Length: 451
Image (cartoon, rainbow, N blue to C red; front, side):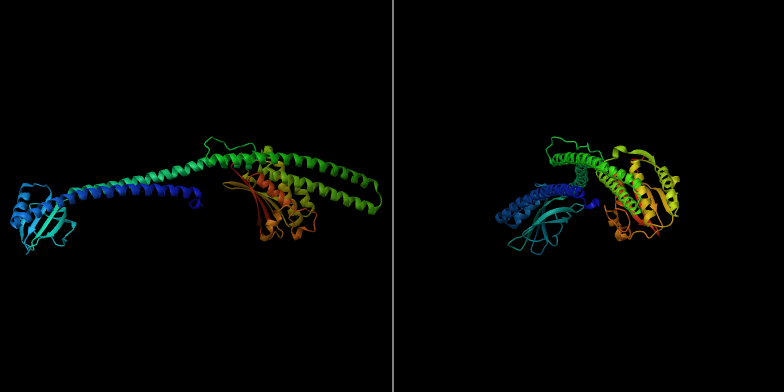
């Protein structure tokens, strides 16, 4: 699942770090600006308060009232908020109509109040002071403009954060894409090697990063694999020649002996030896074919073949054998024919093995089928026998895997193994399924190389 992949986790990490960095920077900026703006207003309020308290100390409350009236009338300090009330709360001087509620003494707070001759409330930073006589003094500064500036900054911060999130998503996608692009060449190379092109290598560069190290390691591994496959091909070819030659000579010697002996017991012994020699020769050839197919040897022999025609040919070859056994072979799906590049000899032997198994261990009519889907073409061989139990199918596909039903026969347990190896050589797969009754041997061949 993509959400659990390393690529997604890396992209998510990049995204989260980018968003966290943007949010931290923007909110730190907002905090600093907010603090500086209101610190300035608090400093103005502190200066005005200290001046007025000094006036009150020197000239008394009457002098304080005159100083406040003078400041208000002449706007000595623009944006100043002043109110002087007696102990009963009656205004004496200032630019506020009444003492505001919920104003604490000794500390500055922000409130919305109406100044005299103003029709709208304004944000103010005010501080209350109690005088020795019981009178009260309110000093402050209008911060409406500062509050609007901070709100504009907050809106700009949210907009910048939205852009930061968008850019973080883009950075995360580009980072993940860079990783995928760097790995795509490695994946494509390995896929080409898997399909039989042992000469493909991962392009290298001088970046010296982890991807370059990976490319170098993969290429070294592929060099070793190519050398081993070449050695395997040489060894298998030599083994085939070394084994087939003496086996062929043995068969010729047994055939001559069969023509010369006259005693029934000797003739029977020679016939048995000849049959075992044929079986041994077929076993060696099949085992070598499986080994070569599993090593990817044979892709150079792929040619475009009409799969429907191939099924018809198999049915024609095995038709007489089926008739001798009192069975019948039919072909279905030939109308949906498709041409694919395949190793015709190996596909023919794989289908022949499936038909041969159906003749040996199955029953009823043998059906050769062709079905074409969106991604695969499926060749199938079905019979109407007892089939293979689901828990035994993995054993049946193993090399030399023989089920109880086949142990008394002459097979070596390589028929289905060869089918599986041929399917893998074609980048496909083999499936064993129920035919209700009977067994279906299905070979799925990919259509991506469709001819």
